[in-house]
Length: 296
Image 1: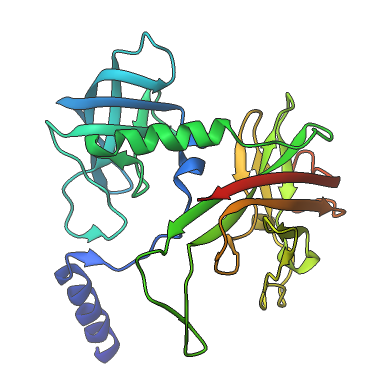
Image 2: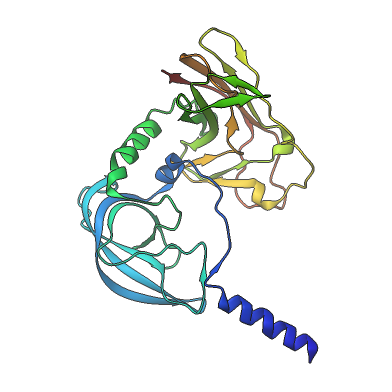
């Protein structure tokens, strides 16, 4: 009886909380843009359907397309799905409404044909961010990819944040920093068939060397990124043809104090086979590439 009462109290507390707490891992906007089926500017014109799934109701709205940024130019309407009313909500629920207008970064639903999601926090952008989205799409196209090896290419996305108007101290001393930069190493499948890339940090598969405008190498502290752990299925990332996937986490460069062009020497290597963990091919080999970015 006591055990049942505890379970009842726990359930009652769960239902009383309107949002269950959860968190999102940071993903560069470029990667969401790269993986999207469609990217459009438009307004939710009407609610067209409701779908029951896993004891929850989902609304389906129709986006009236005003501009196509990615996808066929003849696209006039796209169906968008999002969580509807429920006894309780998850903090990962992202909901929309009729009349909402903006930039939509759309991924297909895995069950319903011609129905899409904007289920990541950055998958919806207000109209005022349209220039930013176009700038990110331009940066994505400007990635300098390495020569393909067995259909795989290596590149990097560099994100900068301006520090000129911020007070920065390092070990108690003020530093006049221009910017902070984070590097995301990415792989692109330029082949015709799906493959798996192994993302297992204990193998130290990723390497990066940063050289400043004065020709000097910048010290990069990788930290304790190669701790213990066992190789598992989730370490094998499937990369579909024309798809781009991020490898590992973003690597922070030292505070940038000099303007000019910076060069990144990148590396990715894998010797591991899949064994019984995944079906399909696993890419084995070595890639080397370069990337540059400028700080004004």
